Length: 250
Image (cartoon, rainbow, N blue to C red; front, side):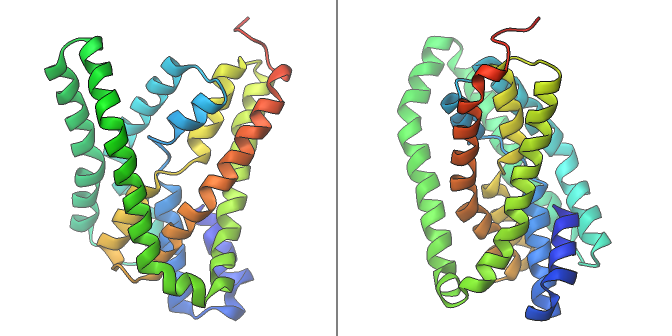
């Protein structure tokens, strides 16, 4: 994503963008690309009849990696693009939006004790979590709505590298799974997790680092706008190609 952002905003789209705006959009896309999905991938896995246990392990590993690697990766890539990043803000954002939710989940599971209680709690909390997600997206689009309506061409420019990155990562992972004869119930979620983004984290960190009305925040919001139709198209493709994969491991 960093490479695509620099390619498009520093070169291909440079004639139509101010340099400071291009730098902000690049920063937003780096934040988006460095935050692979840890939530919506459960939805995409379910829609493709993916293995639930594999998806859970995959997401757990992803969370653990992001706790230690998200801040260094983002700082490195933003530094390469000459964007100054306050390390303290980046680390605090990682703790708030990755580490604390992970610890809260582990603590809740330990307090509930057994699977029956966990399932009951999940069923009760799921509507609230969906309301929270929808409210967050609605607020973000409300705050950026004027820019989105006033500058549709800029939104389209930002969407280009996001779409290329999404389809590119899916093709690499899904193609590798096909070559390795991985069962479809594993191949689909393994391709989805790299394609989908943890946009809540990206948006929150963009706002923390660059401000609510920054170009970086706008780029991450465009990521939200693009992700759902892109992922649904990939879900449809994965379901159509199910027969090309073995049903179980050799």
